[in-house]
Length: 269
Image (cartoon, rainbow, N blue to C red; front, top):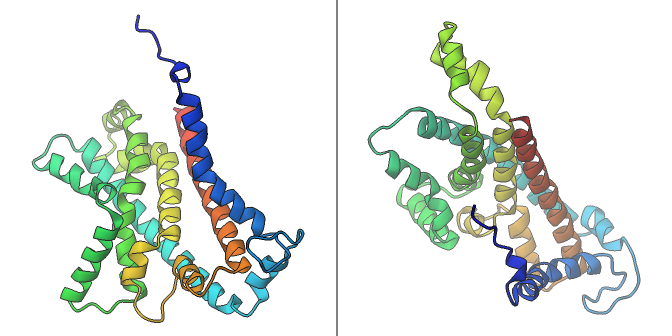
């Protein structure tokens, strides 16, 4: 019987782990702390206050950020919905359609956006829209996000489907159900935790995306990440830290929900 390797016993493993966690999360924690700073300074602590959160909702720049947030949520919800539907169909074809010509290439194309640097995807997308004469705006952002989010939605859906044995669908077909009925009444409900998890993951990826959005958004259209970037270019203000903290909390909530739904699906299995 093979012995399990305890990585914690390797020399230097724990210090390296703590260093990586510190470098990864210390900046986020600092931003969250200073979002409650009474002072306008981003380095000197002036006492605890919710002043800058009020500035986000009722301040001078509040209308700009509200409009950007509305754009972000509309695009994220639509992109997540479309990409999840496409990913569900793709997972069904890849895992339930048996062997077919081009299956390996199809799998590679689905996962390609995960491998290609996002800046390359952004430039290529902008060139494509320019080549076909497509005016940049909300629609170009939406189309770009749908394509980019498909592999993120595909991963949890495919992982869930791989854990579902085909005997359930075969039993349904033995009881005179059609293939579509077996999919709709048997496979789809069993896949639902993976589908929900994929939707939540695609939603947060779309909501937080900056690079692709900044390339294809066009003039006069802003999402929350691009609006934050535009304000930061004029100088870092405490209200930007408050907005960043709120966006971070939304991301944490949705990623946690995605993980919990996926975990519930494993427990149900």
